Length: 321
Image 1 (cartoon, rainbow, N blue to C red):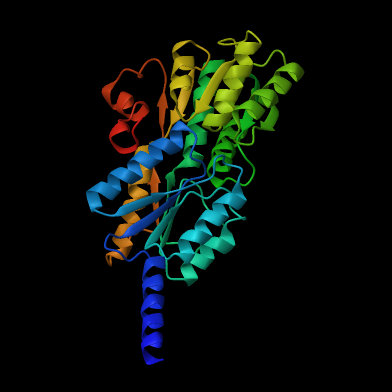
Image 2 (spheres, one colour):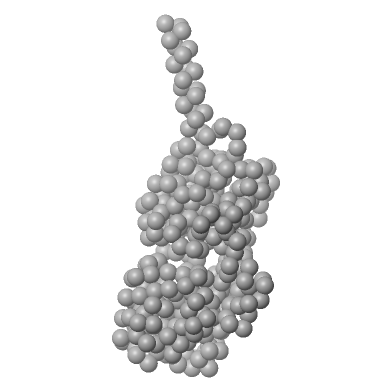
């Protein structure tokens, strides 16, 4: 009887140790909003690079599309239950993820929020592009393109996403305060989906065929809007400032469909997110907030070495492909 109890106790201990993933290397869970766009793949490369440099294991897992908040919650809950050492999270919805973020804090799992914020303060650090300033940059750039006058539209990304909401707010604030000759005649959400963004943009163009300018606040709605413009034969005729970058967007910039892009540094974002979690685990006190700058890219600076490094990051050593 005693022998059986000892064997059972030993097995239980092994299960607990296995569940906590305490097998040597520190494990950092990195949860993006999505795994299927070049932005998030570049974030993954940055996270993997940090993992290699800091000798920690990266567990990368996220929803297929940005609107799958319930899937993101499931992934986080699993990581917390298995007691990964730390988590870096790009919040898909500022309200939907609150309870899970607070659960990680209660469980003693240090969690860094990156890219987009959440409606709680139970995290270690918030790392993001200064999105409000990025939206302001987009407004000034578009105003220059249209001469400070005309009818403009805005393709919004997704309700509940702090990052893109800040860009949109920065854009609207600048137009309202500094460019009274520019009228925002239409706003629609693309719901972080290229096909839905294309449909939404076609609706805007049907209602406003003489549109002068356009701002799209993220990669999915930027690509969708570009597809709509090209399908209507309006590529280059509507002054278009996009946010983020991808191979397709760069081709549209070269082809004149887009006139400028406000570009983030997703590789650095992923790298900083993992680094900050590891700093916390190693007893340091990271800053509460880290703001990363955005950059306006157009044909005048696209071939500059620092810009090429930003829009063509070397991700293959970390994610393959």
